[in-house]
Length: 372
Image (spheres, rainbow, N blue to C red):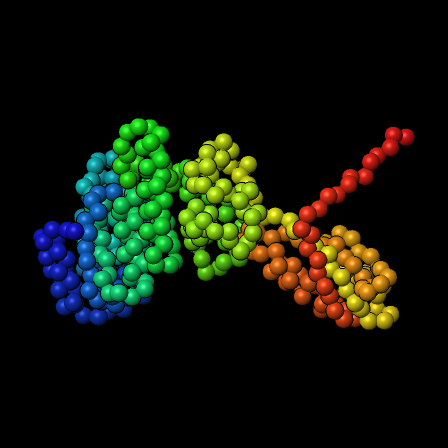
């Protein structure tokens, strides 16, 4: 939490802003007051001094009307101070950190507007800043999630913001880090801080599993989720829940059931060699078809890449087709096969009914080649 003097500074600045007349915002940076008012009550936390990406600095606590939307000082205002700051930057002279309020994932300038403006104009990517984080205290789901994210980020201090979209998931990541810390302490024989354990967890466990998820392009099947969401879901099922997930045992071949075993496995691989989060499944589709439609249906099915063999047969069924499909490891065999049969087979004119067989155990002979 911040000191009473910082809180009084915040209150003082807000009072000044409240007294200003409403003006058009189309040509101005964001107003801290307007965003803060939407969430009502708040808590604050001093995050100390650290670099902040300039693209994340989007507004001002009290001078939002003095700068345009690109953080350039408006023409009718004095430019002497700005030019002095730009001169010091060109000469490489040190400048004190700016003071920012962080509200959710955006930053607002309390002190240092000219330094921010000059840094943006010169194309800097980051600026050193002292940060006071403003945390909404209303118990909406969005605010609860934000508070959990802020608490985790402050505690772990890892370089990337891990964005989860469900409340209660960050505590699972903390449990993983604590478990990993115990493992490292036993391995090294010495105590380890939570932040050091978090750093190692991030590099040797989180990032490798995220790479596997990205390689499998799983995020394309979950448009409203983040990669971190998929990490949390998969890691919880594999390393905490301890039950066989509905997507079958295929995932165990890529991701061991033990977190440290996964870490060891990934440490022995280079990234291009990370396991693919996809697998092939084979099925046989048996069909009854209408009279005189058999050959036309065979031709249509033969054109599908997934159909590897197709035969006209005598007996209870008219046609049998061997299909090979690819699914990601979060889908089920039944779901993948069902979608293919429904969309590609049953929609063909003349197909009366289908039955699908999924092999349980298979042995396939390879054709021998004779020397000529």
